[in-house]
Length: 104
Image 1 (cartoon, rainbow, N blue to C red):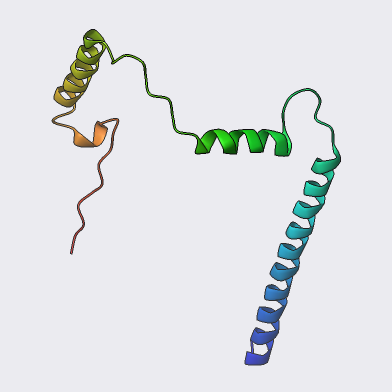
Image 2 (spheres, helix red, strand yellow):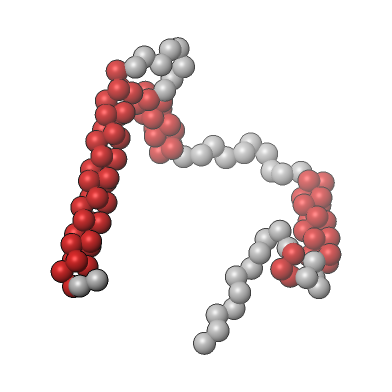
């Protein structure tokens, strides 16, 4: 393959990819316009639901009214301790994997 043929293949490939990306953008825009015109029924969908969730996301989270009971904390601590002792010899079998050390 000569250099001119290689440039032609490269240009054609880049053109095909660019046209494909433009078609993807056109389809996304088309579906967005269609979705705005569709009535979604009684459920809250689309922009109305998004406005509700975005407003709720900006509000501060409510603090729990009472602390976690001691028996629940004891169960959590016991499970963590048992999990640590069971997988002490096999650190790769843990449910919470650790990152491997960086080698230089």
